[in-house]
Image (cartoon, rainbow, N blue to C red; front, side, top):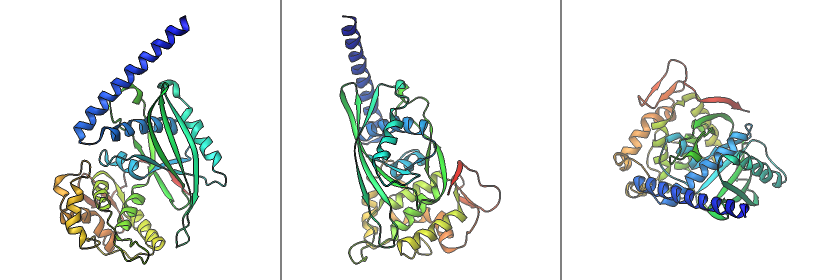
Length: 329
């Protein structure tokens, strides 16, 4: 009898929590002009990161859109998680087991349960002899006996993502006690992230490598990064050189449209970029703004110093302010 009462009370508490969270998620989504499902995913991602990075000892790092979102403090929401693992693997099963142990730790702080599905491994070397092992895992998030959400994790190893790791604070997407005590998140260094976006703009695609990029969001992401980040000029030059060689491309001396189609299509796409300022919707405006930071590095005018996001200028003297805690070998 007592057990039945406790079960009923627990069920009511979970129903109440689900309703409270749905209301908060809908309110935030409306204020940002995005689909509530995207905000819901950012909420469960934060719960996942809270578990993963409280228990991890430096083997995991966040990549991709979530790393950009945390760094910029806003912008494009994502539907999946990109993670880099510090050590490679022959058998993918221990990778899943490691993650499952980490995300099961500390579950007393909230009533959610993360269930990892089968791991789907891949190995895709590129034409330049790089590439690495990758894997995908579907995660089901349970609240009581009902599914709250599902998402996909893309996993790679860090073999070619050398360099420092930036530790960034994770801001809660909604205000709720389940998101208290969020850890700092290890993310790919800003110079790596920025170099990837710059190179992606000028990488050719298609069977004959003749098709210019149509990933208009890469330019918007460059703008977001330089507006939010302290950047080491020497390191950015180093990574740009490495990525040029790896991808077999030649970067321009200054940012320009990858093809004439960008003139018409970028403004059209920019209207749908989450929280992308209207002032940057025109192609030339975004190119000019990003170019203040990027062009002197591409041309070799700036080879050392650091970019100040507040002043939007390069500082060639003084120490580099840092949010980095360690170097990756």
